[in-house]
Image 1 (cartoon, one colour):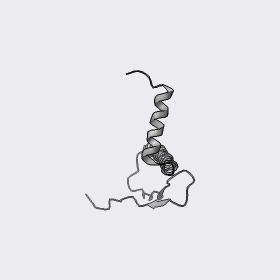
Image 2 (image 1 turned 120 degrees about the vertical axis):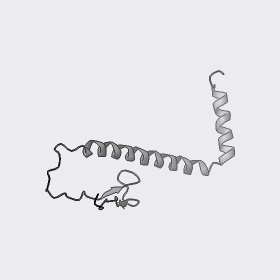
Image 3 (image 1 turned 90 degrees about the vertical axis):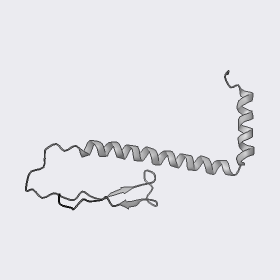
Image 4 (image 1 turned 90 degrees about the horizontal axis):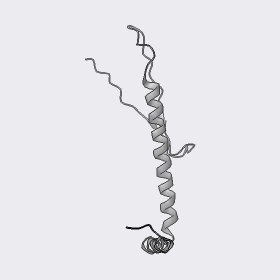
Length: 95
């Protein structure tokens, strides 16, 4: 298999436009970009959670444990309209 030349690239683009239609392509590109932003923000949040989850000092026996603040997952950075609060499960059973 050789490299793709300009003729082959144009032919592929024409086939894509014929398959999906010119009106559908901008919507598909927009949703693909939104998905990429969500994935990027979630990966960044997971990395920051990993660095913050390692405690510097072990917990003291008998000390009151504070509830962590509730997190909010956003669809895109700065997108407040689609954010929703996340309730994390708490294990209250005695073992």
